[in-house]
Length: 353
Ligand SMILES: CC(=O)SCCNC(=O)CCNC(=O)[C@H](O)C(C)(C)COP(=O)(O)OP(=O)(O)OC[C@H]1O[C@@H](n2cnc3c(N)ncnc32)[C@H](O)[C@@H]1OP(=O)(O)O
Ligand SMILES: N[C@@H](CCO)C(=O)O
Image 1 (cartoon, protein in one colour):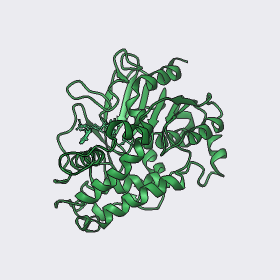
Image 2: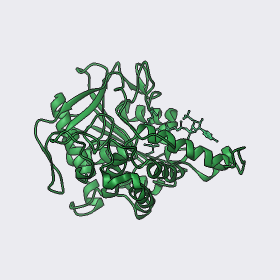
Image 3: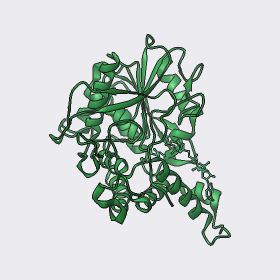
């Protein structure tokens, strides 16, 4: 692993909105100047669809000169048809692809670094609601999200029920479980134990390259399945002394380190740990009962990180939800990004059904 993250050239079509007022967070901390980066597709006069990305995703859902992370799903004639819908994808608050996060400049012009406050998923949705106001979007025909994006989509439907007509929740829970927090714990420890972390004030130096890489390696295993790793890599050694699966994880570590900021990884991971739709609302069932949107919930049959039982809980608790849908896949949690054919069918069912 070598070379820390630096924000590269903006993706084609990326723009920014500065929120009109400081954002008061659940913790009481205040972010004085929040910038949200976003991309759009289609005509602003069409019904609007909000797409919310997962942990290391960004606003680049689809593109012409460079493919996006849901290229198969969004575009003219595709399941989210940009001839019919105005598609909006913001980069999450706390992220590192254009929205305000730990690597952004603070009032003194230096990166926020360790001064960046803790965020919750609700803080992120509060920022996204002000962002939608700034775009003049009063309600969404659909809000769609998987994993961390699904947590935000769910909070949108609870915090702003009248603004969400339909909702697609993919591979996400009502609340982060002990198991999910447990998998996150060594990832956070690895980053913070790296001498390059410098308490979070590493921007301008190499940063916690090894720590972030190890965090991605731990996470990557949870995103895939035992059977996939066995089939793809077996016990095969490579000529360099590493097992093939170790080489695969090293590759993913190096790739993430090149494109992601460690401070954002920490802030976003801790925001996911904070996720509990029932917190302060009388519990999960009461909170899910607040959702007014026509809802489709789907999980992946082989997801060992966000198991199907969590999506069953959502589908059974949300009044306007159909029965839980199952994405059949050997890939585990990442299937919501990979199985675009099955996800397209779900989107079509929601939007046209
Ligand atoms: C600039 C960008 O990267 S934009 C990407 C933005 N990312 C996101 O939006 C986050 C969501 N996306 C993802 O998490 C992923 O891209 C997914 C889940 C959609 C797809 O996963 P992938 O990484 O494409 O698939 P997979 O796990 O099979 O890995 C394939 C990679 O492993 C490499 N690989 C496979 N076997 C080995 C091995 N034995 N040793 C080393 N590398 C290996 C492949 O060469 C390939 O490399 P590449 O990605 O550089 O082309
Ligand atoms: N592969 C996804 C998994 C998180 O849901 C990501 O990196 O964002």
